[in-house]
Each structure stands twice: as structure tokens, then as C-alpha cells.
Length: 269
Image (cartoon, rainbow, N blue to C red; front, side, top):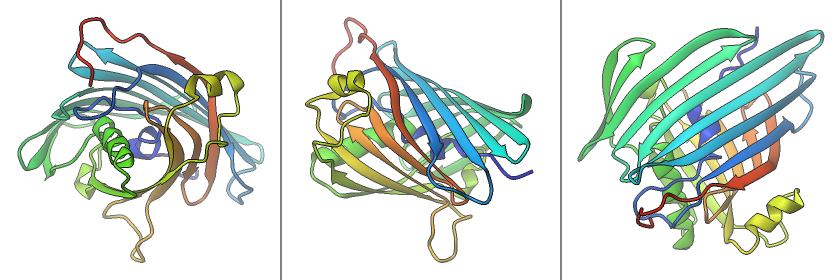
């Protein structure tokens, strides 16, 4: 059977707004994205997918993420369904990240990755409780929410390239994931396809981001292990998604969007 697995970073980062310290005041929200195969491939007859996420405040000092990505791979008479479910919590100061990702293929559980990562002065310590208990130390890294905050801050400052060490909850943390992002202002006529969604995002500044991911498995010629592009709004919402896995590419956008109220009594970011 073909490999359908996907790293957490390869999927989640493109869709997750952040509330890390120093970022703009971002909107907690629920979003649903519909995805389809971008072009024909010899690997599959067709692919369709859906991403659903909820980003909510967790007290005043953290954000919680409930994320799910389901994809259906059609190949001749065979249908393979992958289901990745992630629960995560990241403190707004970027110092602690709790994660639990469960992967299911055709109804059979493929594994759970669970643990906690903490940032010190010059290193990131990761403690896994599943699939096996172990600890490792990485170069100082940003977590997914803080990474997105960094992109927005740099975009607002007019910068066009952002590079970072990244830890996203992947069980292969020792491969040292890094990312390079190119940021360009989006055209005003590039609006979401759904009129009700476009109205909710009208007037917000936005950028077109192309992001490439690398680790020790990266191609010797410098090719990334994964590449994505998306439109990023200043409140953290994303749209116009393109996910390039090498053998196939998925693209799509916001199907539904709703905002949550911010908790009363919490200071703005």
C-alpha cells in the first residue's frame, strides 16, 4: 500500500492562527476546509479531503487546538481513508506545548504520539509519553502557534522571508525540522469563494505565504520534504490552501468560518 502518512507540521501549520506574546490580537475561531486533488497523478484516480479545526482560549495564558484532517484516496477499485486527529495546547508565552496526535487508516489505529515540550534559554526539551516514553533535546525551537505569530509579525513589519527551527509534536523530532517562509502581500481581489466568509474577512490585511519544510531526510539537492502555500490574514485565519506532498498536491479553501468570543477579563495580546 502507498504511504499516506503526513507529519503534523505538514498539515496543521498552514491552518492554525496563534496568540503568542507579541502577536496581533487574533480571533479564536472554528474553520472547515474542503480539499481536492490539484492535478492528475498516476498514484491515485482522485483524492478529496476535509480539515476541521477549533481554536479556543484556554484560560488567559494558553490556546487549545482541536484539529482533524480526513482524506479519501481513490485508486482503481480501492478506497483508502486516512484520519488524523490532534489535540494540542500552547502557552501564549511560547514556553510550553502539549500535544496528542492519533492517526487512523481505514478504521485501524496506526499510532498515537503524545507528550510535552518546553522551551528553555537555549534548547527545547521534549518528553514523550507515547508511543514510548523517552526524552530528547533540540536546538531552541518555536511551536506551531508561536511560529504563525512570528509570520504575522514579520509580515506586518514588511519582511519577506522567515526561517525557523520548529517542533510540532512529530515523533521524529530528532530529525530537526526547519522551515523557510516567503511572504508577499495578497491582492485585494483574491477573496474567499464563499460570500459569507469573504464578508467576515473583508478589510483585513493579508499575505500570500509559501512555506517549505526541511529535515535530515530532505533531498540532497535542497528540495523540501513538504511545501505549502496559503493566504494568511492578520487575525490568523487562512484560506486558498495548497499542500504539495511530492507525489500529489491538494488544494482548496474555506467552506465555513465562525468566530468565538474572547474570554472576559483577559488582556489583549
